[in-house]
Image 1 (cartoon, rainbow, N blue to C red):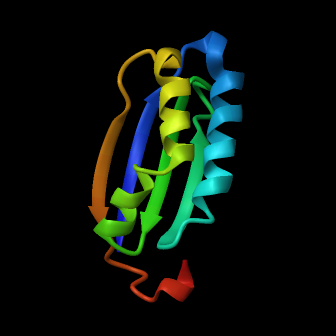
Image 2: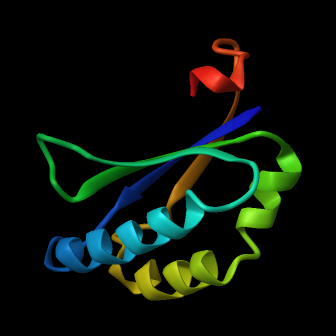
Length: 102
């Protein structure tokens, strides 16, 4: 299993648009084979900061996500709404190993 967190700083005037586009991406991503989680988190102290939490069964399923139409549409839509480029950080899952616990 692989988890990636993606930190995003959104321009304040684009927060609502970013949320709308990200929720659409979230809904489609949950239908992908190999996707275990896809969470969208918004910072409570600074609403322009977001953290996307993505969990996949394998590197291959994570890579396949980046080729989907919904991801490519999301990426194109949100790129101008970001204060700075998004930052993805990959993680190896230590626990839970049992994917039924996700």
